[in-house]
Image 1: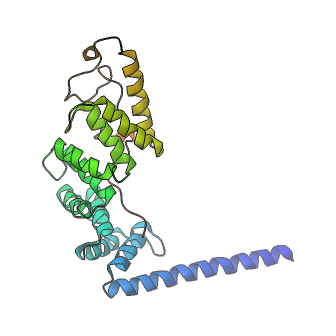
Image 2: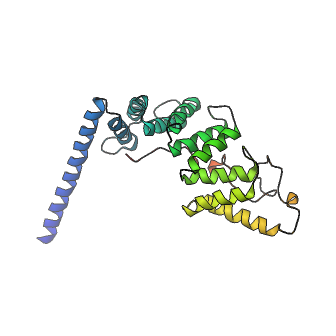
Image 3: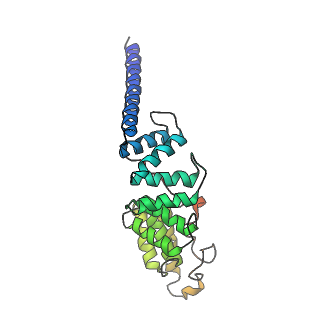
Length: 241
């Protein structure tokens, strides 16, 4: 009897949850259709993530754009991500960079980091390491761990900023303190290398300022361009409301 009652109560809970999700979707959609930018962003997220409705990138793109056109910074960033990844639209790095810039100029840290990536890689904009470092710094100073690691790499390699191992270590440490594993590895690698070269000519251990840090000529630092190695700099959507 108790087992049957528990099953019955479980079914009621599931039905209630589904009802709440449906009501939430309907309420959000109604507000979005009435022009509320925050609701449009929320509705786009629902379509993007398949929460409360079947996943639909085309609909997500549509509602992100409506919110972005009204100046909703989070939607501008996420619209950039969709263009960057080709979700619901043909991949277009120029459009991605355009929307990242819109959000970055409103102070969205993740968009600032993403715009830095665009400049570092020359995706949708002319490659410019000075601009990459500029936008990484903007995001890093707001506490974005990926940007802190990326800025550390720029200082380590001397790209866009004067080469400065102390600055590289400082930014790696900030990112590592937030749990960024790439920054932790970069910090440990550089610290070990510097310890080993205290009594020797460091020019024998490091390649030229503009080098890419290939294995063998520098510690195995993970540069901003190396997405396959897991550097947490890929352009990211904003999931919070």
